[in-house]
Length: 195
Image 1 (cartoon, rainbow, N blue to C red):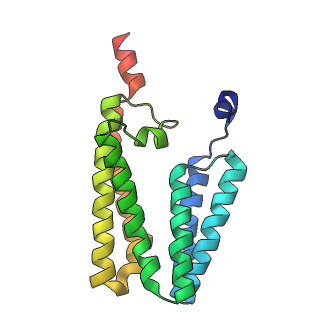
Image 2: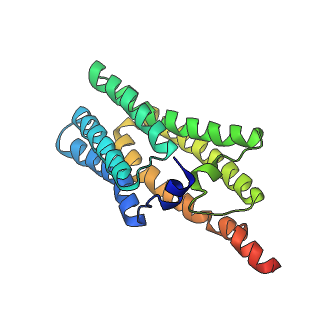
């Protein structure tokens, strides 16, 4: 993709992005409520890939996190349906969260805050800000992975509710709690103060 194509790439409005992110989860919950776990898994997969396709059509771009999530969903959702075993799909969030946490913390150890590559178009932080934000999100993702395993193993009857509502609420609350850090290390703000 050329530099001019990158600059003219369309961005989704926050409401459309939220619909693409939350839609498949709601479809999963509805499928589970009116069918069973396997119907919910199949409908979730269809909804997720439809949302990814619609996002690509609108923006001509797919975030790397969406691509990785899509691959993991295809593998573990496929195994769940093929083997008729819920374990694979229930483990999927643990693997995704642990992978994202590993990438963020691994990037920091290599001196490359990878979160800047994901959110760089939306937020412009100083290098120190990206490092702190990457560290916090990395630790948070590992915490979510652990929590998913706790619910999956010891509270399996509540796993669907946790996945659809609990993990989503925790992620939104954590993201909002990072606003002060992002405002503190916002590059434009720093530049304005020094001028």
